[in-house]
Image (tube, rainbow, N blue to C red; front, side):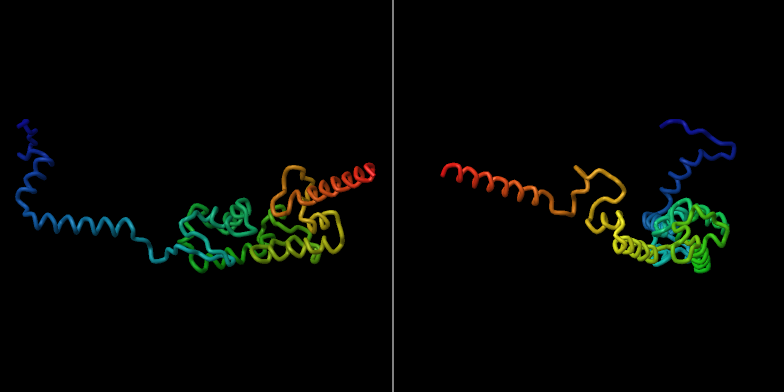
Amino acid sequence: MPSQKRFPNGHFGDNFNMRLMKLVISARERQAIYKTGMAYRRRSRFSVSESYRHIVRIFGTDLDGSRKLLYGLSRVKGVNVNLAQASLKSMGLDPNMRLGYLTEDNIEKIEEFLRNPTDKGIPAFLVNRRKDLETGHNIHLIGPDLTLRLKSDIDFMKNMKSWKGIRHSLGLKVRGQRTKTTGRSGRVVGVKKQMLKTAALAREGGKEAKKGE
């Protein structure tokens, strides 16, 4: 048996003392101690604060409570990372905190701030609708309001027969992209070309029949 290093108080060290305790304590007591320790470890690992929520609803969007506040807000339609960072800095909220720890007051504060960000000191280049056609003001739309306004803008362009409106109505690309090899999904492709080939072959066949006569 290897020699143990003796400490000034007469003991042989922690490892030797633990082995000695294992010999003294009965098997049933060791099992009880083990279960108690595992239960404490399990509680300390998975316990969360009562104020923590796994799902946080902001502007009608369910957000993951484990995400950081900065990137969680960017999951809302109409809010990008730049606007979220500027808004959180103006409101004095920590962008690295988790969404699940937001209180109801904080959520109301965020929603009220993002409805009119220009009134709270946010520059106009961060909003998504500058010089609105109806009001002439710089406004910011979020969530379903943004979706409905985009649809109404497209319908307006279709009714006035602008170039973009015509392209929208035909289901083609709008911003000058090439369409020879891209943008072919969602439409019937090649049918018209095949019909033209069939008609051309039929005409050629008719001409040859007339020459034979």
